[in-house]
Image (cartoon, rainbow, N blue to C red; front, side):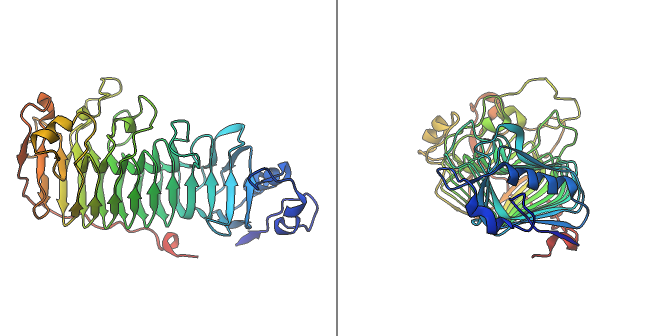
Length: 406
């Protein structure tokens, strides 16, 4: 394994810690030094399998995206609250960091205020994000970057012990990927806290999502190369996700009503169990089809795309509060039910070619509303969906090399 000490000065032998005080800092205490950026990017360009790039404690202002193409590289900071890379002064590049190399690990640092996505990992395998903060510090704004931690088209993904705040789409977004574990993270103040989209075999557990527009989303969208299914959402805290939606107009996430706990849209084989879900003002759980997103067009929606959710199992969750201030036109439904929507809201769209959608709710006294979306809520009614799946999904297992902690 090749360890690379980090230096901000061009002078040989001067470490970052030893020369930081000699460099200009801005009004927020961030080191402003073109040599820092140049040297960091050079290390990324020169990296080889086994390289570990270490960035000591400090706050550093960057003006351009970082990129890594080499396989087998680890980037380590001194801690989430100790090593901070700020992109607030970014003038070039779409992301804070873009990674296209396999077997990548990022840990123990913060990526802050990037122009676009904080970290994008694209078209790789074996990606680990551990103890990473991705945040926008100015509060919820549509101008914030879309995604915090954003692996897309990745095989084997581990995101653990991370913090994401302020993303204008999703704080943690895993798209078109497979074999995924998202665990023990905190997502706060994003449009979507955690989103699994068009991905297969995902475990989402031990996370806390609060103060987002929607807590945890499991989506299957058209116009993408692969569909998704088989997601387990369990042992999470999904609390008070009531922030007004600040996503960009026309984006898929813009359709998520404020006050959404766990949302399944057009996805199959999803288990939602043993979670604490509370005080989400539209509904604690929403199960919907593509036709409820509000942006349905025939553009890109091929005949093979399945817009209906099927084989959804809700069991063993602890529900509390919620449904008392619904958005997206559900207020009249709530009024008709005594002022509150039940814990589980289903839009009621079903595939006419499928005899049984397999939507099963076995969750104590939790009630389910079939909103009859196909008829604009005209036949909305409380229903019983007391059934069991034919078989339970198996936990995701990642390669041992990815799950060892450092």
